[in-house]
Image 1: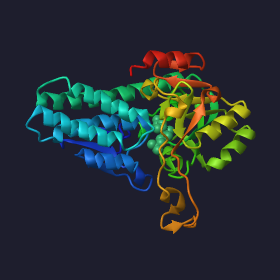
Image 2 (image 1 turned 135 degrees about the horizontal axis):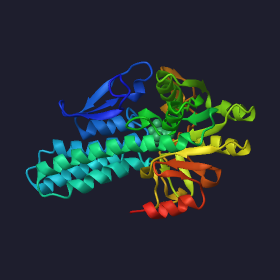
Image 3 (image 1 turned 90 degrees about the horizontal axis):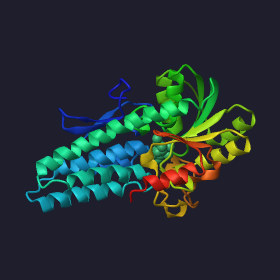
Length: 350
Ligand code: MRU
């Protein structure tokens, strides 16, 4: 999705010396690419969801640490490391639920600490961020490959939020599966739930699929159960922000689709890279981001909720593993249990 050609969502512009990304809050009305030169601006972009989606946050966090290294004017190594760590912690504090953000930050932090030479550390940091971006794209294509095999030759797939190219460096996880299936010649129609309150499904999923010529229909979140009941959905595929051994964390509303899918005997698939797995935590350890009241109460300039009413706005929910038919990763398809608990043990490096 680089520029207008669809090849990247965020990338390093070596000539300009900045991180470029598609500003997602403006889609689908405006296509704007932002050039970001410092960690503070990047932290704001992540908080505002200009960059969003777990794998994209991992890549952004990685570039953010590289930016902190590049912009540090420190003259001593001690001060340099302090600057980089301060930038890293600012980025880490922006969004707590998607584990990929901390994962990308920590990978670059680790290489910065490997050398005494500050210029060398800056170069290593940027190289590592570039590697993370390239790996993410490769993961998405591998997920797409494995996931496409699960879909019938002709099917309608329901998805929630945006787990597409915009949520990754490119291609996507859940939408990567759909793209790969279409590329393999399958007839895939997509039902995109609008995803209240920030409409990532209506604004972003519908935008990127329509742009690729993939059949997409937007429904409100509350229509999904009835569509399943009427036999209009063959599979549900969503992404994930974090996977513990007992639950999948994803955009609020995912759990309700999983419950409905189970009730109607529809497979519920999660597509996510191994960088989304958290082998250290269980469901109750995970912090669910609570976002601002205004995301629920206002649309444009209009207020829809009286001031006296309280509002809750958790950005994510947890879907217990027994509702998940399979998790599609870059290494293959895992069916819980026992695949997922054993894999989590293997990948737990913390
Ligand atoms: O709040 P957002 O838009 O960052 O939430 C994104 C999601 O919930 C996605 O489904 C998830 O990050 C997976 S993206 C491949």
